[in-house]
Image 1 (tube, rainbow, N blue to C red):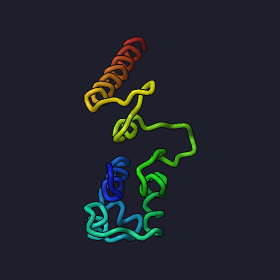
Image 2 (spheres, helix red, strand yellow):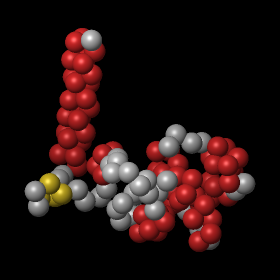
Image 3 (cartoon, helix red, strand yellow):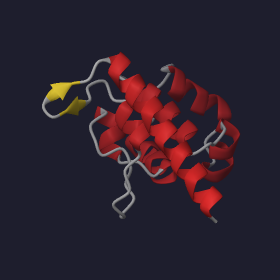
Image 4 (cartoon, rainbow, N blue to C red):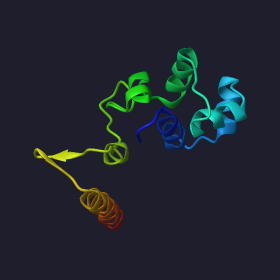
Length: 122
């Protein structure tokens, strides 16, 4: 995600909001939101703050794409957002797209297996 518009769309979709949901909560017109997400226009700084708060992401991340993505005060980490970054490192070596995809699939499989084991033991 190299542009503000791409990050705005990603942040909205990450919380499973439609543009209509954002419009209802912020008062920003649907067509305006669409232009922000398609790069047709850029929101002013106050609008960016409103969207960052709603999406629970940092204003810095929207503007630059640099971590952290979320602004939650807990120690939560969204692995999906980490894997979506352009450059992901492990032990000092950058992961290829294939390696990132394999890592994501491995995480999904581990979680599913753990749930299966936990549920069968109940």
